[in-house]
Length: 383
Image (cartoon, rainbow, N blue to C red; front, side, top):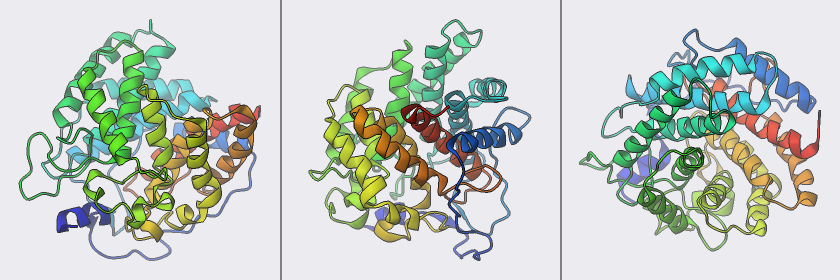
């Protein structure tokens, strides 16, 4: 593996030093009812929305952060976080949720077309994926909304930008560490980044937004190439010749597999219920301790199997989408485990977080948690 690929895997940190234990407290698994966790999570988001409707910011009190240069990368994080919060507020409902989601939507329509920061950093593809999912779900929910025309125009612009930033291998990645950055990224795609974007693209497509078929098919092919015979998914195309590296083992892939399977099915590929069951069992039954071991560690990929803390709530949110693909008799057992796993990251103030990231970690973490808990609530029939 060359130096550039190693940096992708290791992550980029500024500055290169560790923060003390006090700055990164260990999570204390919460023993609260599901309904209370949902209500307090929604209340936290409503209380921490910025005046312009967005969620999260570049501000930090910590001495260590992932590389995310201003303005582009920070704007990308904010758009992606805000879109996730809208999705979560719509899923969970509750006092103030609709009003907060509306303000956030107005902000997203204005701000979603984030520019790439540089040839190195293109986190903006995350913002496009989550914004498209958010917009597509809004159009499906209320196609005659006064916001609909603006949302459709924003979707068309984001689809065009995704085509511009689609990596030559067919998917999308968030960093290009090669010696010669190119306008259309020529570095590696990441399986889970591609999956996230495809879910958003398909939500918009179902709402009537035009999407080039070649854009989707090339991305689907990238995820299919990443799928290993044992059910794991490669972290990225650049590791195709190291399939037994820890991050590509089923334990290292457990937070990616539900998203990748779900994205493939959304794009028309047939996924057997047994494949979903294997992926959810890896995450919730076989390897949960490895996933928890990475939570809140500030250095990316330093834990077992190169797991990063920011995989955790992402993986469990997509597990909630995958859960509904199982036979009914198996959903309930796994839904209970999913709730327990998400509550592991709950703070006493009602928020959730798995990785320190400027001031985005609590909004995005709470959003992922609410998506997972709201869907688990429906499976469990909790009122």
